Length: 357
Image 1 (cartoon, helix red, strand yellow):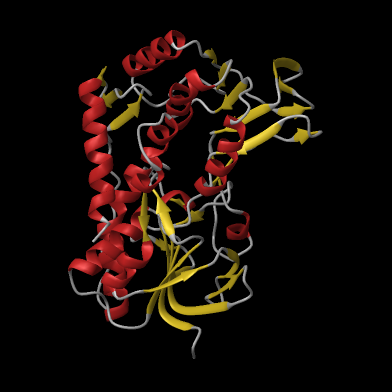
Image 2: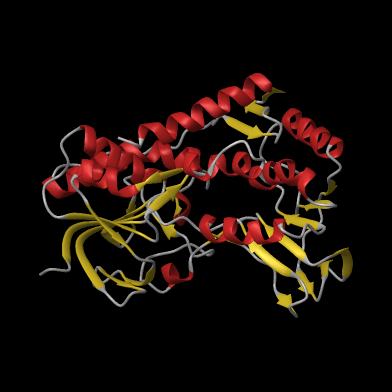
């Protein structure tokens, strides 16, 4: 069957890039294998703040998929996913094609959460997908206006520091404490940088809805303007909940330590689209899942036993400060400065180069 594969990798996330790199350097599993991606290149999210701050070029921040797939002897299919049927192991593409596979692996990420909106007076721009975000941001740059950012995690803080000098006024809203889950030291350092750059930070201020040009926390108006940048928590892609896969209450695919879906062991899921205790929705965890996923996909196609993935208890956090520096958080220790910015650049560029075979 021309549209049937032994293995179909859906999504060009960090974990799948790692799988392809390993297969390019070593022997890949037997059978017909394809990577399905919404676009011809994979963006590296860690370099987006540096790109917006003018420190990187767009070409520096993405991996062209065709050379990597060619080296791994994997077919590349470029089209967004319209729907997935887990019982039939079938994927419907937006261009009308239908693909099936004996084994599936999902690394499709998540979308950005958005409050309910009434009226169209406020323009909303989500940081994902990156292509659409960058095109729209270039239009906004042509006529700078006051801007609000929704999301007090690492992404929201990095974006605020990167954009602080490019808009007349900038406000950052988070539902809880800034950088919740990181150390108190790095939180205080981040607050200092944001205040120094003139960013209004509103902690414990959940935005529950948008009415006209106003953000409301509960019934209280907290900001008025025409542009809102969404960098808030991850929200599952809608087609996952309708796929027949077992999902948690938020719509993310429930997986076992072998990275297999509960109820559908011929389907793997990793990265932000998956739900596994101890594994945060962060690129750091997706990168660490890649070696286990590569080994398990190889074992599945060869009929061998599978390995278990154990999420790391601690992860290094490096947050770009928009001026070439970075903030570090590791085991409760925090630091900041240009040295850590150079270290972050070294790690980011290393990721890109490793996947440009």
